[in-house]
Length: 498
Ligand code: GLU
Image 1 (cartoon, helix red, strand yellow):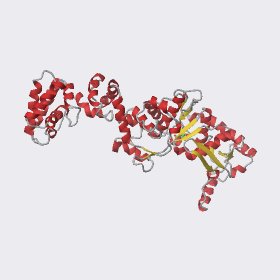
Image 2: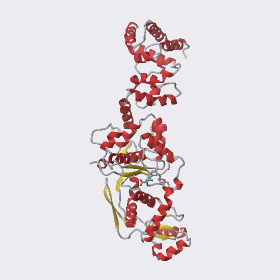
Image 3: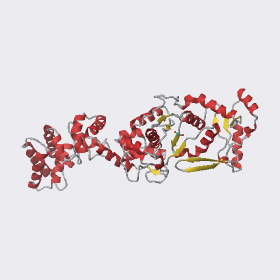
Image 4: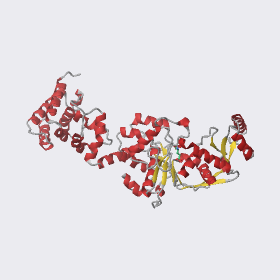
């Protein structure tokens, strides 16, 4: 059942690097729910941890989301009624809320020095106890604590976790999750410099921004009880909690690690970073389709989906919490399907930047003529350059041995090439219909397999052993180019044996 109330959801990346597939999938599901319910998709940059801040990361994340077509309704650049949307600019709001919790007795100032905390940790290590804060400053009378804080004594604010109790939170995919409060510690919510720690900042912001569903990675599950306790201490409603599945390595064994992810591009031509995907020739539609089905399904059979179809069909109860292996073969598969599904003019438009990038002078009109013979044959957009770049090069540079098919020597290959040249030269035009029959006949006369003769011509005309179909290719080359390239191949075959 689709959720009918307009959802207010957020994608809340920390600016620690470029957008990766895990983040992109989280953003996608949030986006789908917002669009489906007529709600709002909010982008919030969570930069409270300045030590992990990477300059340029926010812009990279935004560029990645835009490339995917996941435009946010409220966010740092577009504004909105609940800004600012950069967490570090909300420090005063967070500090005031920490103060509220202290006033209410749900949090307290902690004056413990680093030395005391270090000693406490050593003692707990020796006694083989779990390291945790011992609640020492809970005993400072509130009036005294307030006076010491006001006098400027360094202190943090800790959340008071009720002792001897358990906390239960419901995740929509995983059901009730219960933890013993003893495992939670009186965690710090405000540092001595007055800046909020992540847990407080995120919950205050979620509440003030009216977030109805928190859809995020499962690495946040251990924080969930703290988040729920914070919201409850303020007396605020909890959002619906949804913790998505983790991504496993393509082998299915173990989580996809950062280092392995970094090597993927060099080693396999794949990448977990959205900004690489475009360069590697993937279409946004294919990436979205692939991401959507890594943890969600429309039904048990549909696999090709447009963004609009995903919006229409999305439902939280078809999310799957089981770990999902990152399968790049599937991405290639989807990319091929989406390439084949594109209207020809649109494919030509999308191919142009790849030809430009390779320094080839192509234009949309020329690409549109070539599209019909490559659309079925490319798996990624950049493959079009390998497959059909020869149309736009002034000449091609095959190697001599590529011109000599198996079973022939240089002189018989040369003889076949020249005979083909003469037959082609006698034809008034070089359309597919005009060339195929005479070339087949010639192969028979010369007692060659068609593949041998066609192979010589293919290499001579395209410079490569694999190309789009030969006769369609000949038809698309300018007539003089056909004979120039044949002449160049002739010279190569006549040249030295080396
Ligand atoms: N800033 C967190 C991250 O980058 C988001 C956590 C959340 O969605 O609550 O993973």
